[in-house]
Amino acid sequence: MTSMVTSAVDSSAETLDDLRIRLAAAIADAAAFDGWSAQAVAQAAKDTGIDPELAAYAFRDGPMAMIAAWISHVDVQMAKALPATTLATLPIRQRISRLILARLDVVAGREEALSRALSIMAMPQNLAATARLGWRSADAMWRLAGDKATDYNHYTKRAILSGIYAATLHVFAKDTSEGKADTHAFLDRRIDGIMRFEKAKAQLLRPDAERFSMTRLLGRLRYPAR
Image 1 (cartoon, rainbow, N blue to C red):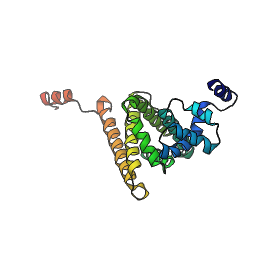
Image 2 (tube, helix red, strand yellow):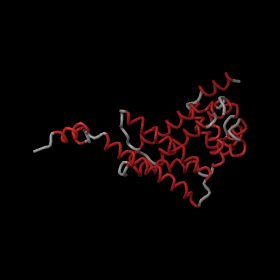
Image 3 (spheres, helix red, strand yellow):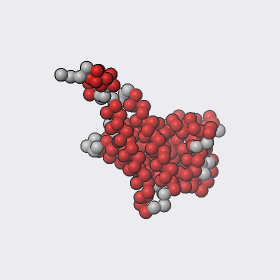
């Protein structure tokens, strides 16, 4: 079967990654009932009219491959909803907030599938892959937000944002408040925290001439200015 499926893929302009992304939303719909399983893939193939053997081959690596495809689907939809040109005129705080909310809009209505995905991602054997997926999501958001940092800020920004996004997803999955108000409030608090951190970091890393110096202070105490 593998050779037949591979030939089918090779004869098409669509790659396996494209196919996975195309199936991802339908698999998420089925995962609410069947979990992230072969049954969910089969149902998604049926719903989308895709060859079930080809779909099974595309997701032969199991649940994490399905979840990764769903995240890629969210990346694509986020970029469509909020291209960089749309975000360029907004303050950075609003850019990040809107990007996260755009991602939540894509998964809205699939909270059960999200909860199941988060449980799978939290399994010890999946933690490394989960960290990579979180980093990838954060990187996609920062790039759309216009971040061009290449020093250590490139890494700290993505590490912080991936943590905030992951925490927000957990709140969103269980949020039953009207209009997901609790999620919005949670996200606002976390982004406020980022802004305070960035402000404090900027002050700490100011040029030496503008920064507090213990040596300079002690020197002045010993030799007062006249």
